[in-house]
Amino acid sequence: MKKTRPFGALLAIVACAAFPAAWAQQADLVARNGKLWTVDDNMPRAEALAVLDGRFVYIGSNANVERYIGPETEVVDLDGAFVTPGFYDNHVHFESTGQLLYGLNLLDISDGSGFVERIRAVDGRYAAGTWITGGDWSAYETWAEGDVAAAGRQVGSDNGYGNLFLPDRAMIDSFTTDRPVLVRRFDRKVYLANSVALERAGIQKGTPDPVGVLVARNENGEPTGALFNPVEASVESTVLVRDNVRSLFDALIPKPSREQRIAETREAWRKMASVGVTSYCDITSDPAFVDIYRELRDAGEMTARVRVRPPLDRWESMADLGIKVGFGDDWIRFGATKAWIDGIMGNSSARFYESYTHDPDSRGIWRDIMFPFLRSPSDPEEMQSNLERLALQADANGIQLTVHAIGDEANGYLLDMLERIIGENGERDRRFRLVHAQVMTDRDIDRAGELGIVTEVQPFHTSDDMRWMEERIGRDRSRGAYAFRRLWDAGAVVSFGSDSPGTNASRYFLNPMLGLYAAVTRMTLSGQPEGGWFPHERLTIEEAIRAYTLNTAYAGYEEQIKGSLTVGKLADFVVLSDDLLTMNPRGLKDVKVEATFVNGKAVYRR
Image (cartoon, rainbow, N blue to C red; front, side, top):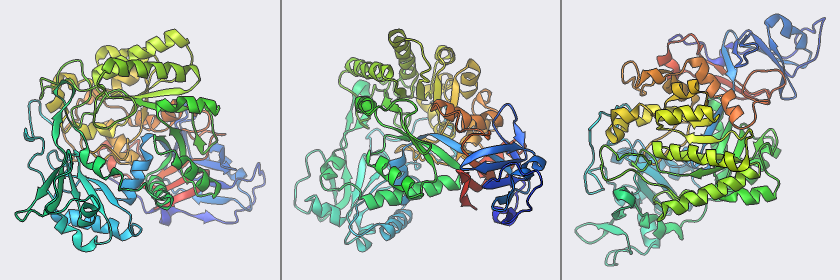
């Protein structure tokens, strides 16, 4: 794969350009000599652009851009670099992403040295006394990142705990003497607490185990720090966990300080800028983040635009404030809500019409609509009734609906529900967002197109979930998994994002290049399987770029202001190290962002 020179070497900024004789309008920024892929069907390719007051005033040829260059214009020589619109991530759990980037990530850790190194690094940057939590160690211990499942393969043990890496508080006590630590294994069945945390919870030698928690002890009766949640069977034998350990500590762990949340926000934005993400949908972060967004926007520090999406049960308070689709400004927008209906593939809780291949007693769960992680509602019919009631009310008040669905029955139910909403509230441009749309029947793929559904998908799920998909639901049902090609051809609007930072079983990266790679190759990051997994579902690179830009803008009713390099739109664009349209698709995952511009200003240069 051909590599260009670092952007710092090819970037030429002309402070005082020659004043053109036919000067039309002095731009703040002109970028020329590039390969611009505009995602604008009226002019797909261009060489140059001009920006004034944060918007494009010119897209076109090198020759004609000269008339926008005045004495104060910043001129960038792209030196043949490939340029696209800024990427728009349709699904970011922003609060969790900031916590993972600034805090602790143990997903790929299943050994003592890595465990200690990661916790020591967080201890070095956290303010004194701040709890270290989360982690999710051993997520890839059983299923490696590059695995591809085979139908019938079964892993793990029947006791629910597995023979996985088990840390001891002695590993970290020496450098966390003044800081409590409570980190968990990826499945939340096992936690590790250091001595400070154990002491605060009243767990010592000779004390009884707290109710609902199993305390590991050494031969002398001393707690090792390992705390176990009893495994229990839930609806239809789906094995879930009641998180008694976390409940025990909840009252002891304070909410993150505002200072820490601001540090996490800045870290997340820095990462977004480095991978070319200029807009994102924030999924149900704490409401405090809206105030942080406003504060940093007013201070001129905001480097990515956000569409805030609170849970569905807050629709009424949104309506009381006059919030509906289109509410907000160019930086912070509102108008949508989020709900859930089933679980996920990682723990076999997604809801299917038929039983799981590896667990004939389970079809997955219906999940309570307001996102309790680890339980199913006691009355699924009541849950569905509540979801539909709230959805009808929000829709009637001009608020966009977005609902999580993974399994084929969950997706089918939501399409049925949408048909009933249309019957009740009438036809209109509602852009219902089917969130994830991971496994769908042939009939529902066609219906998604007929109903004009926005499928809010995250293509890297394909590369990640193929590790276990066929083991869970077999080869035949896996045909309907991540059916991007058929959804596109059926007429559904395919929108891309990351689902950052992932589930407790997987890390989903903010980097759009990984999503483009997955959509175009249908391979794992290690290049398996040869030829791609269900390769007939691949998109072209042009389609994949559109899904990550203009289609997501459309999904948020923002296609008139972002998503393409078009005169009048917000000047958000990305300079890349390689030509995405001509390169070998296998190299997409390695493409680097050379520079990211938001509002016509560079927020990142490599």
